[in-house]
Amino acid sequence: METKYKFNEQEISYKKDQIKRVILFVLITLTIIQQMPVIKDLFYSQIRIILYLFFGSFTLVSLFSINKFLKYRFVKYFILTISYSLLLFIVIVLFGQNKINLFELLIPFGVLICSLNTNFNKKQLTTLLIWYAFLALILGLSSIFYYGEGFSITRNYFLSSKNQIGPLLGIATIISGLWLLDKKQFEFKNNKLLLFKIGIFVLLLTSIFIIRNRSGIVGIFITLGLFLTLGYKFRINIKNILIIQSLLIILLISFSLGLFDNLTTSVWNSLFLNYDVSNLNSLSAGRTAVYNYALEFVKQFPILGEIGTGQFIDATPHNYILNKWVQFGIIGSFPFVAFYLYLCFFTIKEIFKSKERKDFSLPIWILLLSLIVSVFEYTYPYGPGVSQLMVWLIIGQYIKYHKIVN
Image (tube, rainbow, N blue to C red; front, side, top):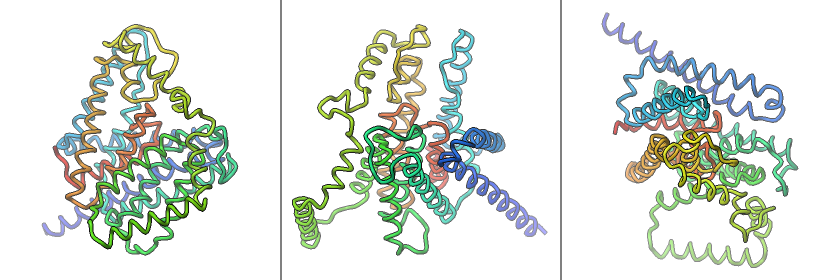
């Protein structure tokens, strides 16, 4: 009788998890579909409301199990940061201001809790990740053909929502890149689809180049470069030396014959077209001038920044830490910056741990991408909107998978 009861309990638990997995699968699909041409123009607001309602409801249900998640230090620190954010919001409203976005932290935290409250095995997670990359590819290709001029880089930006689409394509590119480079990250029966993997990766990367999401491009190259550098041990032997020499000779001959001219021109145009490469401020799209202005403002008002003075700078510094310093001062923004630095420390620590584990480390590389881009875009690693949803969902699974309590 007791055995039968346990079996029924396990069956109910499995069905509950199955329902939660389906809900997350549908919601993640909607985050990409809402950005697609025509759909974005007609139904973006409606889909956004659906996403907020369902994720909000899912989060509330998941919070009933919050005691299970408090064993993770990651979650504790996140809750402390959100608590400070809520307290700061109340104080600011009492003084007649409204200079804080509550959803900035609440959305990623809600997604993280939903993820921790849902069980995925590696095969199910693989299906979700590959589906995400495939949908993002459709989004990228449809956007450049619908809004742009196909596979050609334009002098001016043609996609007004590139900052919403860029994160989705960037995450998908890292997923497809690691699927190509390290099959241990996925549980996929047919690992012989090399051309298919290369095709997805190249087309995703091409889409990002064409929409000219420059911070995303930089983040992708740094992330994949670090993965290759830290993930592979190069053995010095005659065979490897000969292979490298042969590749170098082939590359030199190819460049001298002009075989890569179109490729190098495309890369150059994507990053620098319409910018003066000899002028750092032009190259950074005016960011360095704003950074200098913001730093001067922070020097004058280091305690509470804009909220303490009632003075506001005319531009937005596109850097997470600097943006928070300007808004709330070095003192007032300390909890936000401290948690951000914790995320950086957590990512670096887990990257080096993954070298020993040689197992599921994909979520850390996705988080690293987001943190790198946060140097150039102040909404990262939390937004904009639900564009970073996959980052926090996959981090939740990573914490559960490796049982990271400390």
